[in-house]
Length: 243
Length: 243
DNA sequence: GCACCGCATTGACAAGGATCACATTTGAAT
DNA sequence: ATTCAAATGTGATCCTTGTCAATGCGGTGC
Figure (cartoon, rainbow over the protein chains, first blue to last red):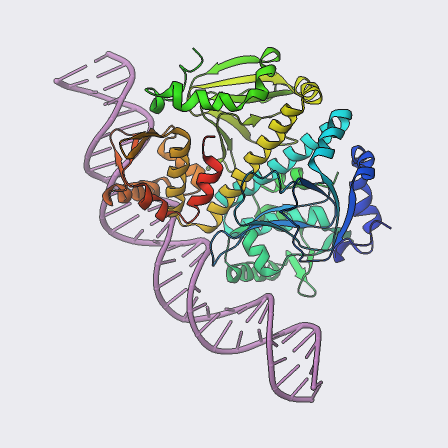
């Protein structure tokens, strides 16, 4: 009963493909459950940032860290997936930064002091937290690398791979998922113009790499071609595979 | 005698402006010193990444995380300053990522297991580590925001502010420092072309915002004008001030 | 059914940077 | 001093991408 809130795309197989393996690796978290509150949020809700001392751990769903860089322009700075740790209170100063759910999301919430005392007691939890924070750091580094070194089309291919890693269900050779982000949100994440994004997606459909049934429903028809479009595809797969 | 290796710019005042306050805040680290080795590296040396289980803490100097995104193009993914924590072994998979010193640098090196056991013993150390990792995360978020939302000139202004925060010594109204990064390295950090960077620097000099004595010697003549060039100057100052 | 709204697509155009080519400076070695 | 290689500055040009505006599509309420 803990897997009902996963995003649309994985509806059919959620129990086995999304939540179950994710939770399996988080045995270190099991003992934390007694000390934590469970939260369920709908799409497009903002995590309370001011709550003093609170830490969130994502159990399922998708959360974005957004930054109002300019009045006219917002930026999606980071995408957070199940297992990821959010600690708004720790951020020394994040002017204009907020965390928003991009799909229905289940969170564990606990206080920083609880986490610390549990970490002192439980070495496995310390391992988990350090490992996880470092994985998140590595993902941000990859994100920067993509923004810095890749063309728009390559970046789009990279995000599609990333989404496929986290949300995709294989469907007879093809891989299908619902993109939880709107066109504008994808553009914010990839630092490109929404119109340009449209053009690129159309091109990928025309080249038969992708197919789209409805707005958000994406099917990757040719995974190899998609990977060929993104020079950093190996790194993306490595850092975003569900383990 | 621990402050002789700081970068050129701060030679005259290093004892008071660079190393001393930095070390003062790291009381949590004091106890770690017994468990750690001290390393001194010259400019342009690569930290051993394969050393299993090792964690580095920067005592002075400047380290860059670089990524060979494409054969032709490398990216500077992160700049690390005194107090920052580097844990190459923790990175689950960072294909092509390496850490290089950008100036003479002093490091503390210790094993991950030592760090963990010390953290279990010492709550203040846990605080320090979590705080620090989060500060580093916030800085990377800001970096992404800058790459995504700002024009080249605004990004350059942002980096100059950042460098001034970490390395600058005020010099009768103006602020002076030696830029430890070469033109190409700055370009890699800001995701722009080295030629374009040259033009922007020339423009800033022409506008009398900056002056340059030698190649790397930069003096900020008009701090307010420089801040006006960068829409995210407040965030830069907040996340990069020496505290 | 229709009108409506928000969101996505597409085209024409402009502009910011990248690229290339070449000149210039720097500083270390001789 | 002189030389040389490497790093940097700068101009002309091209191209990718952003901008603006018009159109198309998909739901929702009437």
